[in-house]
Image (cartoon, rainbow, N blue to C red; front, side, top):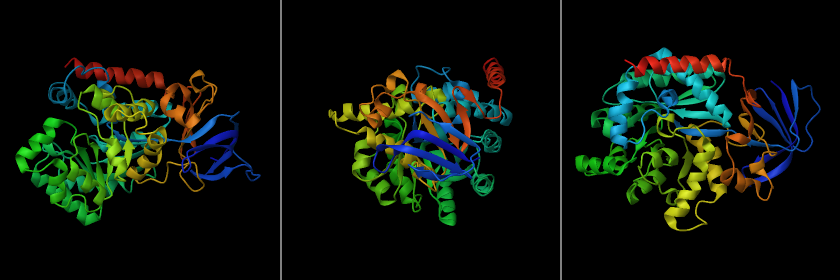
Length: 421
């Protein structure tokens, strides 16, 4: 679809400034950004009336089907949350369940201005079908551990989903060190070397996880993985709360990414990641919501606010982690982690964007729009979301190929079946 968004403004992420002008798309990419768009026949011309175009958020760590556990497993520490509430009910999910639940997650993503996600979960065939049918962009990460899947299955998925659909791709990965044997981790490292590929996993999410790894191997999770050649081609970790000096060195040396998930980490009382130190060392930073079971919403505005607020608290410094750094992580940092050509409103980039309603009360007065996106923004200000130039959400309406009322009912039926068994 050829779109012309006129009479608006757009966020220039290179300078972190707001500029006036038009934004045009065709063939899934931005074809023009500036003051004087070329005359052309567009499928749709949208008068923004001063509203703001921003890059779509890259949600860099998700478990989409876990929306079924939203507000179910509450007030538990991570170990009990996983073993007593999450794992037993996840075991009852079917591929068909994950297909339906993924579509519910997509509806929530697009209503929050999210245009891509980095997802780790089971039954990726069903999920890939749901993502591609709704028009949403997803990069999968392997979920291998001691209890499910195998090195052979991981390689099969890697080859299959990197040639499945333009909106779908796949990265090597496993759940975490504490759920994955050294033998399996060595197998993942072998695939990384075979395909010159990055590797991703949950890393140093809790203090006990990190201490137990040191007790097993005499090394932190990052150090043991690095010792077997896991990160020769990059990759990164989710959460990364308890990184030591050498862990940061490893991340920097291998051009890895720290993906932070502050809402989930606070809710599960896991801790506060040292994002300031990561940025000081030039380590790429991305932001994710984690799953709805531990958040409980898939809202990047909440994550951004906590990213900056918690660093200010951690360092007793109101200047720590400025809003511009947070926006960079949510846009370009996430795109770099996912290895997709998005994260900026620029000619040639993927036309993944959101339109911010500047007439909402929380966006007025316009003292500093860039700062206010982080400190005052919310899902309430998202007017439109498009992936590859295709509008999936506009003015409260969903265009993902689903009757949302039926979708809600289908998801409720899944929960009823699982929780009453």
